[in-house]
Length: 92
Image (cartoon, rainbow, N blue to C red; front, side, top):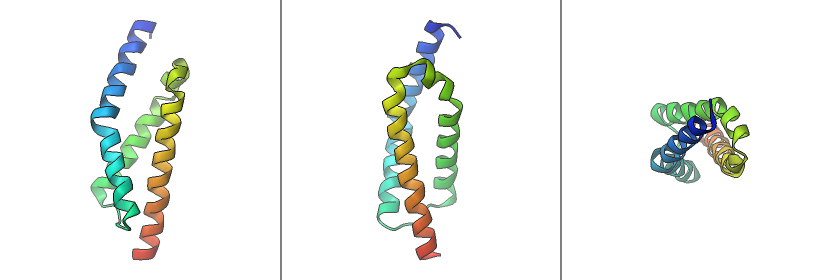
């Protein structure tokens, strides 16, 4: 992938994150912080979001300016999953 294509992919990824993924992730974080369990739809979304992040590792390495954002996203995934596990244990 050349630099121009790579930049286009980054732009599309950032739009998707800004418009869809981050708002949904923040809602999931709020949900688990309130003690609620994640439903199948929530779990599928989270699994897919993490899979996309894993698939984009090479792109992140090509664009070091994305490292901080990627780190924050991984931290958010961990916060959500860790609290979801606690909620399952406590409410299951």
